[in-house]
Length: 284
Image (cartoon, rainbow, N blue to C red; front, side, top):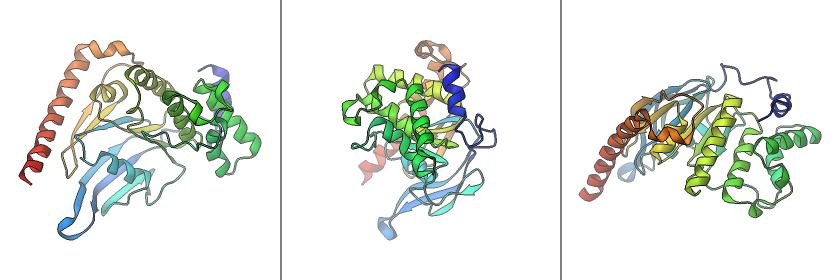
């Protein structure tokens, strides 16, 4: 990203600067999430506590059905805890808000709006003038390398391009937290790697706190400062692994001894928890 784009983008940030170190703190305090009641109740998340510092990039790994997305949705405000609290910047989360941007696996763009209109939608709802919305959208289009696609509809773009628009749209309100639920899961391997590198470039400029759910161990290690591993259902965090690999990162990182050792640790946890889930299903 060139300096002119960065300076133009900063002009519309709420604090006119890069994120303050005080923005984007996530606190999950003894959170349990239960769906249903009585004998058929499903405990998706069980008394989980953790803290994520402002600006951290944290990935959540775990076996299928362990509550990864449910925990993420509680930070987004789509799911309220049955007990405990989720706080972002010391505010209790009870509903979605512009301080938290969300990116899903499915691109979730408005199919009838152009790429430019999709990105400008959030700033418009937030009360920016039409001129400001246009400038913000143009800035993000340049940032994600899709300025020439501004007037295209989402259906005219490739999957990778649509997801870049989704990330830009989520960031256009300058949230303190970016929540991502397997955003690259539907992409082919090469596009996925390019998207991972693009995301890290954007994150390094913004300093936004990122909480990222994935099934892919390599992806988690490549992206994260920390990896949280969840147990089989009912889900809770059973491991908090620090990723001390140097940044910036490139694809060659996957062949280093440090990467391979961390991958071995992650796979051992996930294999053990997946076996527990399998044995539980067999018992029923």
